[in-house]
Image (cartoon, rainbow, N blue to C red; front, side):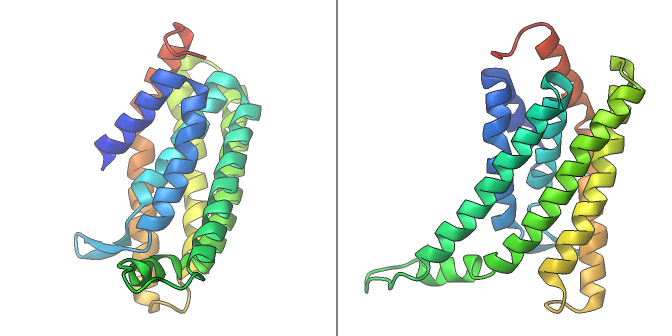
Length: 220
């Protein structure tokens, strides 16, 4: 999953520059909010799927901040927020249509997207707060440590705190009362642990993106 996501985001950036990142952000948000309805076990602990693809949205905004400035990063956050909001409205409206006798997918759509209003509310709140913090924090550390040698610090310091904020807000809104506290705690711990790992492992990719941009390899 890490290879697929990191590979996809770097291909998008290499081919289309900032436009590729603007495309990737809504992809990651929409896919993550579908995958999060599935729970899995990692080393006997329960976790929700979708954490890896969602975490790459923070890599996208960090690359935007580093290469194009905080205003472009804020634009990316707005695009992601709009994409999630529209998807939720469209899919829940689709559920209102009476399926034809030959329909095969209504029950599956209901299973996935009937959860969406609560998950979407949790995701919208968590996404907006954490991403705005990420862009602000990244800019703060960039002013404190502007050299490329400190790129790892601003990337990880901004993302890891923002991911903690995101995990707490999302998990409590989306799953409070749905799962026992023991399961809820496991989801919070494993979710943040996965996001922390992704944040640490994405560091070489932001260096690569910075190098491509500096050398004029990307299209814009």
